[in-house]
Image 1 (spheres, rainbow, N blue to C red):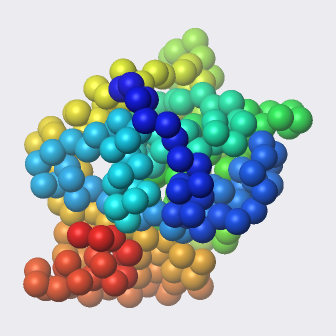
Image 2 (cartoon, rainbow, N blue to C red):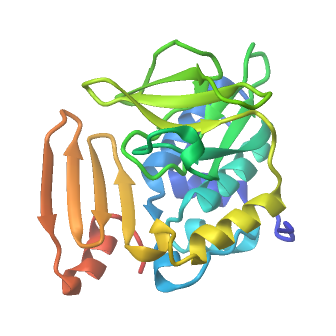
Length: 265
């Protein structure tokens, strides 16, 4: 993946609606993270159509910024990494095992991209992730610190260490669903590079066994609700925990994507 196109910070910040300070501090990191999470939807419309999306910077800008589309984790977090670096942050890219719904971390491959952001003046780096397509996703970054609960934009998270057989500490991101702590994904701090994500992206975006090639999965987060279209099932979860579901007819999907998810189909 070669970055032959210069990152357009003005266009990106306009896309997410950020008018705050442009500096490498914690307030900016939190603000831009939340603005991205609210503005750019999560979607797998390319993989479910039979093609892996491009991770080239120019293609990401054309699709997610200028094209008013969304994407999945590699697209979101690659774009977000460029934005953070343009703002002056130092970013390490990590790979995680999604363990949501799994019995143990080792049962899932490392296929999720997440970010470790080094904030000038802060004693520890922050876990940042604008590309996790689940209701337990981070809306604001959390410091890399164990056994402390953090509340951000109405969601509760914590990081814990879990035992495993490797030489590096295994971190687990958990979210509180109102009943208890639920595991989201596990990761170590060894860095991954752009060619690694090219392999992951090709596998996740083209393998017929991948969940992202089997069924439509579109997510939109706002200040007062979480909206999910999985196949033709639309689920709306309000800030107070109220959940509503309905089936969407095939002929109504395109209109729904445009009007409710803000996706230019």
